[in-house]
Structures are given as structure tokens and as C-alpha cells.
Amino acid sequence: MTATETAVLSNGLTCDIPASSPLAKLLKSQRTWVGPSAKERNAILRRAKSVAIVGASPNPARSSYFVATYLSQSSDYDLYFVNPNADEILGQKVYKSLADLPVVPDIVDVFRRASDIPSVIDEVVAIGSPVVWVQLGIWNQDAAIYGESKGLTVVMDRCIKVEHARFNGGLYLLGFDTGQITARKTAR
Image (cartoon, rainbow, N blue to C red; front, side, top):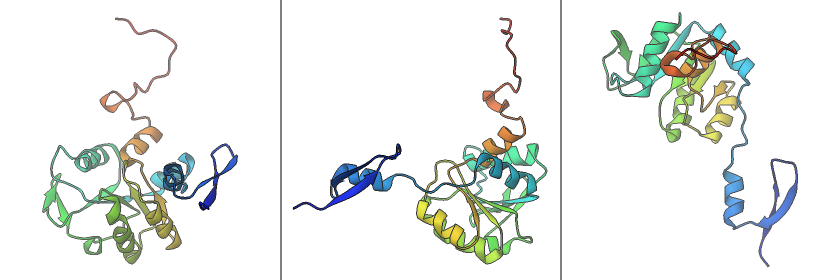
């Protein structure tokens, strides 16, 4: 007899499926962790005075460089860059690790592989920062749960630049949004 398990679907219905089936594996892999709501993310960004960017890059083609440029130009955050392989980004000193920072940042924004997130969380806990913000496209559900168990607020798979712009009316940058709400058609 094949072992079965009960799957709970998003609509609340349940069904028994073979435990070894591809569907069972897919359902197990789906995301169940839910981070802070939009209102809570906005509050996190408004409270913050400083942001450390782990995995910051001096390469203008990297997303971490773009985010750093945006935050330096469009926010009042004190920015700290962490990368053991760089010396300077945007004219600022780069620190080799979070432990080397001269302050405890309010947010640690992470540009690292999903498999690296648990060790980054350990570093965040060690320095006493309250929030770890894992960038868009990076997902490690076990790390998120682990971070919360250590008392951290965890934001995952969200771009801090997009969220900051969204809450501050700046999504017009690079054509995301004009920032204007109107029913008029634009002249061509």
C-alpha cells in the first residue's frame, strides 16, 4: 500500500495524495512563511535611520549597486556597505563584515545566495540589528523562520528600493509609474 498524505489546498479543501508523488513534493515546496504586511514594511522603513547592505558591489551592473545608488540619492538613511572583496562603493568605505561596522544598523539588507542567509542571520543577531531584509528573488523559508525565532523582523524576497519608492511616491524612476493619478489621456 502506498503511503498517502493529506494536502491542504489554498482554497481550504483537502485531499489525500501519494506521499511520493510530484504533486506532494510541489505542495511541500510551496511558500507558507509570510513576512510583514505592506503597512508593517512601511513602518520598518520609516523608523530606520541606517541601512547596511551585505553583498554590496562596486559594479554598476549589479542590483546591489543600483539599490545603493537609489538609497543614497532618495533617502536620508546612513548607508554602510559590507563586502570582504571591495574597498570603496559610491565613495564610501566598505566594511569586511557586519561585526566591523561602527554602528548597529536599523536594517541589514542582504544580497547573498539563499543558502548564505542563515549565516547572515547569525551575524545580524550577533551585532543586535533588529531587521534583516532579504532582497527580491532570494528565498529561504527555513532561514526566515530561524531569524524570527532569534527575535528578528524578517522581510524576504522584497526589494528595499522598490518598497521605499512605493511608499514614498518614487516609482516613476525608470518608468515604473508616473506618480500621477489622472483620468486624462496624455497628449501625443
